[in-house]
Length: 279
Ligand code: PDD
Image (cartoon, rainbow, N blue to C red):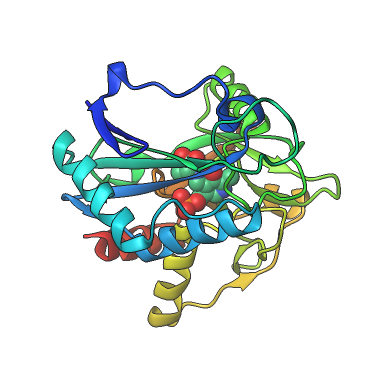
């Protein structure tokens, strides 16, 4: 496997970063994950726009412009011969003597890797998974895609230990925020498709944004309105979206079936819509 590290392509097994990189010491950096389907990036513009926003929000200068970044991304994918999978990019503030405040003269560090993955799932029933709920213990700027993922890792680990795909986070007000690495959607007891409104408590998902456009185009109604934990438990359908989860039905929540325990019709329709969009 070949990685791109600060201007150079190198064997990933030999790639290294400085131990005084602020990403390593402080989690002072941001990242993006783009899905690769049939050798093409899915929703590239959305991911590059979010990357730029993340950088702006924590005042890291862009290491290169979008056109140059795209060239490097494509080259990493080409060198790794990834047809189905993901490309991962990470930008940290750079290398400096350890001090919490921003260093003065430092260049951002850019690392890009690509990885083979399973092809886009075609069968909804076999793609369905289960989830647990856990308290959302993250910080106040979850809209920034930072590499500071400890709370997300702790949540995902709990899900794994429970034999589940995802941990769905419930905030202190008893509202569903998102999954540890996914956007959460539900069809509530009244049949309304809902996902939480965007603010600094959740990451603005690119898959969510793409799906929102598809919903408008298809004339399917939905509301950007968060669910209480009780509403969520009473949902007819639950599904997740992300660059790596696509549209993923959740059919068991905290050990109990969601409705009748099978993917619902709205999830099925959106799964189809998104698959066609990604193709
Ligand atoms: N995760 N919420 C969180 C906390 C996420 O980490 C992600 C993405 C999403 C969905 O965003 P998108 O649709 O743009 O992938 C929502 C990526 C895949 C990851 O960390 O690997």
